Figure 1: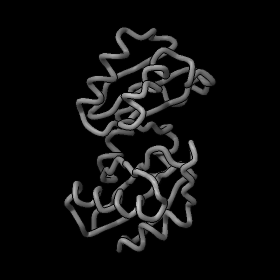
Figure 2: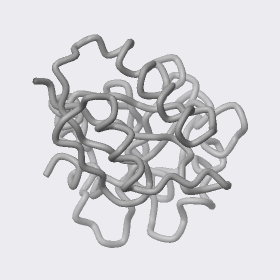
Figure 3: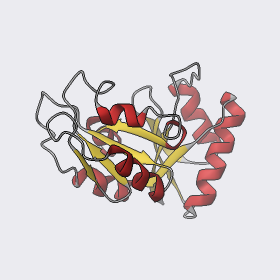
Length: 175
C-alpha cells in the first residue's frame, strides 16, 4: 500500500464548500483506506494499492467534481515525497513572527514562472526559495496577502495552477 496525500485547491473559499465528512466518504468510496482529513481546507491522507499517480489524480478529481460540483484540481503526492518537501524547508519554521508556507504548482514550469514573476523579492518581507517542484515562502505574520509575492500568487494566471499550505498543516498531514 502506498500512502498518499491529496491537497485540494480552492475549497471552502469562494463558494465551493467541501465538508470533511463528505470528503472522507468520497475518498473511501474510491476504495481507499485509512482516509483522514486535516483541517477544513482540503487536505486528505489515504492509502491505496494503486501506484499510477496520474490516473489516480484524474480519478480523484473526477470524483470530487461529481460529488461537489466544481472543477476540481489537486496536488497528489506520496507521503514520502511530502516528507522530503517538509524536511527541506529552508527557513526557520520556529520563528513565531513568520508564516512558513509551501506553494505547490500543477507542474514544474509553473514554479519557474512564479520565480520569474517574483523577480528579486525583498529578502526581509518576502523570503523565497525554490525547492524541488515547490516554492518555499516565509512572510511576516499578517502580511501574506500584502507582499509583492502574495500579489504574484493572486494573479489570475497563477490562481488555478497553485495552492499553498502552511508548513504546520503539512506536518499534521504527515503526523
